[in-house]
Image (cartoon, rainbow, N blue to C red; front, side, top):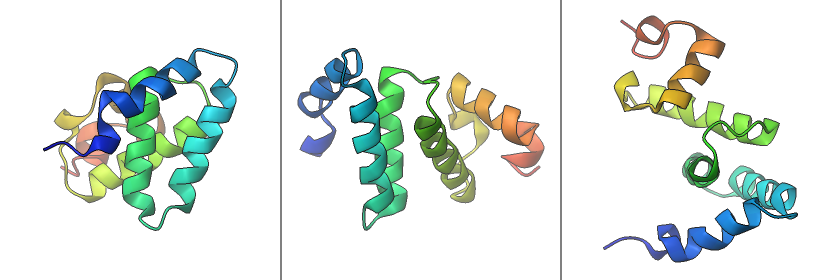
Length: 106
């Protein structure tokens, strides 16, 4: 069974708010929630994935902070670079160089 916090009924209001005048407020609330949660690592994953669902290349510094933390976690947990989306791989390459040597550590 899917956790109800991650279904479309939860995501739809966030997606709709992202296209309206509350966009900055939504990003700030998601960002602050991730940084202050007791399980910061998993809250960061959720916050990043929620915002990435709207726009995986969101040009906002808070999104980029969440994305970088997510990518570091993925690498540290041993996920291969093949599990990254195109925009995630592009971000990693822009900040760390080659995926094979820096993400996959080969």
